[in-house]
Length: 364
Ligand code: KG4
Ligand code: ZN
Image (cartoon, rainbow, N blue to C red; front, side, top):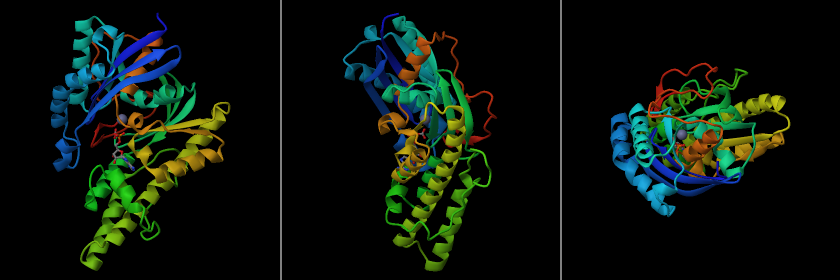
């Protein structure tokens, strides 16, 4: 095997169509190009991602994104060593579109194919961006995921806990909707919260009474709804200053829950792996400055290194899939034309399965 590997990565498991080119030289990965075509406007009227619309848009955009990525990297398929694709978990139509596209390219260009778990893509990103070694603690926190994982190896993850219902990003998006703020909800709620009083509306801190690392965010949405309705009943509308207070109170609760559960996850992790004190985050919610600050404070308590990849590699993208593909390929993994799309695909098969579906597909 040469010491340089150049992979095309393809991602289409939710509402972003993405292609990227990543090169491994020696031990370091480099993102040569990353293209993401989002679908926010297509789903804006529906209050969530509509699977059929998403799948159709992926099918229309995938080859365009691949061409754009190749051209941005100034490469052709002849320069590519293999194709990596998200094979799950996610919305089945989108995952199938990506897998079919990857199979077509691999077969046509005579390239190896590597299927990648989307969550592994997120979880392996700190090795691409910061070159860290195993093990490390990972918090995935986005609109579709929320879980603590110990990354032991390329294909070995241990789930310490996670949400038992909604992901925090979903709660931010719902909060924005209830308060007539723009989508995606995270950034608009964060902006409003800046001028709000976080103590004005007492919000629950779900599952803090349980000693484990599991979380719940669906009750927070209901609490927010009740508080909003009480304000409207009292004031005949929603005054701007109280809207900011609602945002600040909601955000403070998410922060408190994530910080305390991170403390518990770090305690477990540090007992098992005292020599590698590292916690990394990924997912769109990790962009929130208040949450990031709270997590950094907790990692400081443990003397742990806190890593947050650049936002473009934190949110859904194909560079993380190309990189995870490189990692799997180096460990000997190859997939054939029988690679199937898996809507559910937990990273840790021993951890209890998540029930139900979020607005971004089946829970892994
Ligand atoms: O990782 P991501 O792009 O996609 C997946 O969900 O997989 O994350 C998007 C989610 C949305 O729910 C969005 O509202 C949330 O991340 N988000 C934020 C912020 N920026 C994005 N949540 C809180 N604060 C933010 N600044
Ligand atoms: Zn994701």
